[in-house]
Length: 406
Image (cartoon, rainbow, N blue to C red; front, side, top):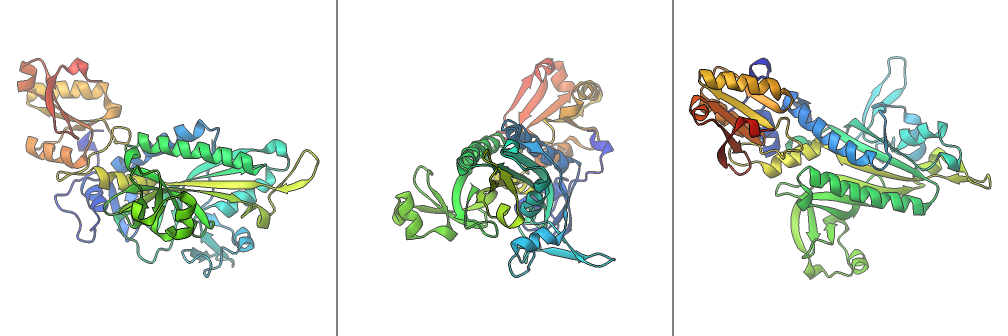
């Protein structure tokens, strides 16, 4: 991307109504635009980050033979009424609307009911199972207080995976595979060391669940952990029943704040039974389908990474999720010519700052935007047969041959 050809504009100051660090930096660096509280647009740089996060998730889930689908955000109330979850008393975060011709619709906060209802048309025999399907879908939740930038929004992007099984043992086996896949995902996204599987309440989904929590100073959850972090508990389930089951004592646990980036649930028959999703076994007996669901907050992960790796100069993206690998600056006539040649050969991984602006302004924007490496090609560096390569994370600069940069 040529900087001169994009509508991205960096800001020296964050908007006054954007107090969260992730929201402020992502806005200043031109990744997002705030429409209203809890609702954001993703600009070209931001969309590339989102797509990179999605790519990592896809690659790990596809290894488990999961198939990607796309479901509707508009919801028919009927399956939700069968489970009792269309009621505002049961689920108080619905956005609902009415058809001109009459009748109510909802905007999906999640998709357990519609996927279960849909698969009644495709699952009838044990031969149809197991089945694993996932989607990347915009969710809508009428949060009382949308805050913390893109960490807590009313409209947000989520990956939701649903699994369908003939036995509880098969559900348990797949559940364990997803746990490992999630660990792989968060390691690749750069937050693996500080992201831990956590025992938590199931909220509107089930009695208990497992969350993946990233330790973060601005996290909205309080979690407790033992010395080697093999046991991590959400505050909401911290009691002597749970501690006894895990063979840990309260005084052995430390407290910190964390941001939830994912959750997984063994639903069993919670949705298949009321919605009538059954299969015929080998003896032609009808049985309820076992289910599991597994979510990752894609836009939330982007916000967590922005919070976690930023410094006083701006964002610092891990290479796997960065919108581009290189921020390219040419200085002087020969420097600009060589920069043009490099850009033409590496266009897909390079943001070329070709603006008519002072080098200091370009360097400041390079730090703010936070790409992994900055390349400066100038008449001075060319005189030494090299270019200057700066690591955004460490700040280390060195002269290297242009041919050595891949």
